[in-house]
Image 1 (cartoon, rainbow, N blue to C red):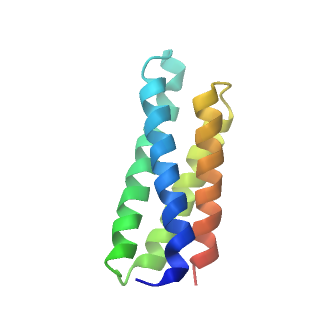
Image 2: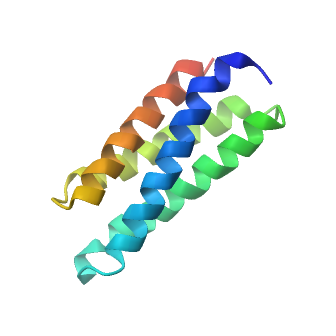
Length: 106
């Protein structure tokens, strides 16, 4: 595996963890958190898939990174709109992950 992926893998792992924490916390909140919950799941899942694709040197890594960045950006934007600490932490991790993904897209 190419060492250039080291930072993006760490960012994806942190993002996936933050999305899972936010997802579980939002389940306990009001109905207005439904969009946040949906995006948390999508983001955590694409991060997990992206990590796997990088580790097995998939020929689709660039496309997967592009999609990961797009979903992370959407999740970060949604989470940033909520005042909960877990949402703010999630937004930060999502934006960082999107940035790391974009650095590697050719």
